[in-house]
Length: 308
Image 1 (spheres, rainbow, N blue to C red):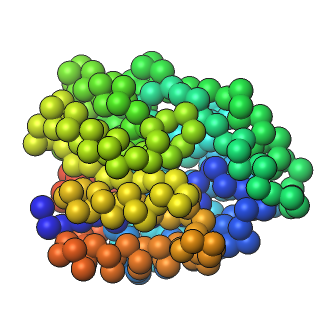
Image 2 (cartoon, rainbow, N blue to C red):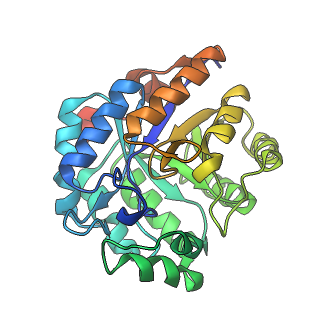
């Protein structure tokens, strides 16, 4: 397949403000970064919210709605809302904004796992906010809860009842089998858009061998009924997503996944990362999919059928 979907994950819930002055926090910043990424070639924008006063990850509907309508009005990109939120949030908190917005697309983590961020705390000597250091350090005792009951609820409430389709985030081989389980139960329908996640401590390491193995197993489990995309944390971002592009997969970049644009150089905008991967994939002979082409490929309901 020549067409390639570029997803941009604009801010996420992992990095903290002390890690980069360029991390978007306020509604204005998130909007500007998202619109810039769309203009640079991202057809999907993966979105989290933050408290604009502190930069802390937020599940508040008002924080989402401060930027969602503005992004919706400013571009035609697919708006993909996180249902993962942050590992310290309850499922009800994580679902509040997606249920309100009824987006075309949402992320869905396919299993419970350790989600260890604490090594990042060792790299920071000066903190902007009191919440940041304990947020990172306490992740040595953190389980990101995504049980089969949780997954079934999201698939039912957001998928079947509101028409959203999903970016199935698979951090490990077992998550592919969980997705196959829900396909067999009839709660999800093809085409499946599977996001392989590499480099999070508690999930798969960012090794090329892991990517080739995940593709082999997805081929076995889903045949021609799936597409895969790749994201990789930190310094592994560009090498592994480039490898995905050479294998016929799709790619995800953004400041949620990596704060840099090159070794030792912070990215100032999400658009920088989108422009870089766009240049790479086009030089590989791939054609960047427009938002409408991505909608067609993924079977999305259309932006006019959301509540944004």
